[in-house]
Length: 398
Ligand SMILES: *Cc1c(COP(=O)(O)O)cnc(C)c1O
Image (cartoon, rainbow, N blue to C red):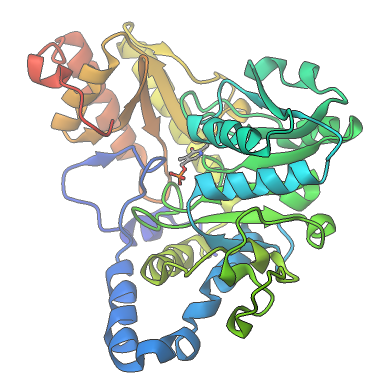
């Protein structure tokens, strides 16, 4: 374990001259990743060919990497598996949870949830065709809507736009009091703050690895099923890789006894190799240290921006314990302002309708980067440098 953030910074290959505050969306490239991924191609793929599945351990990667993730989020070993995308893992977990509460019809979520989670819930409810419906309330009203109608409370712990953080343990307790199950999306928690699923009594969880974890574009998601549900949880997507004996090629489906049943099809081995390299760095740090530093850097950032940019209004909670690891500001010309910042080497992103979002990732962001970001934002704001036509043309990905 290290608390040496100079060491962690040295593990990343960041382009010269930029300040990267978008690791909450896509983490940067770890230096060890290209070689690790290349090794899967040569010698593994080249020489082992199909033998790689066993000889190089490819087949078990969803579970070996799942165990490493489990250790980082307070999950019991053997109860996390990696694969597919977060949307798909949310769908599987939600379907499993609903089936465990067959007499109930409400999925409760909030308006701060990421749209894909809500779309998945709507689609699943439609497919079930049994009157299951999604109820979406304001984040602060969630607790008051936990009634005995609710089958599943489905929330993202940290709001992707504002960074507002739910109290996972308290809401889970409250959900259980009315007999509901919980599904927590950890997209903006994993690698951002300490997570302890077992201690919080969470039933199902899912998260991704391309944001704070730095496993690269398209890196797979993961799913957690609490041990008490492991034997009863259905998978919704009965792929052959989740079968008890995939290579028996039975005509009938029998789920694997373990969380492996949540596997669907062939795992993305190249991406899993990138995940291995990313986790190597995470295993050298204590998330509590990362969290403490994230708070210190975020406070410095907020203070600096607020002192110098009256045009920007803080969108994130002011109290650090109610925030994830990002800081967001409202600004009516936020899209153009973000393009102006990016043109000056300070990379954050924009979320409709007016949010400028900055991810604070202590593994590779320190005081000099925060100070340069503050200076650049202050320049762009003071001089209205965002007011140029080319900064107002929306790109396909914002
Ligand atoms: C990033 C994110 C997703 C993305 O889902 P993918 O299927 O991996 O594209 C889903 N949910 C939340 C809460 C997210 O923040």
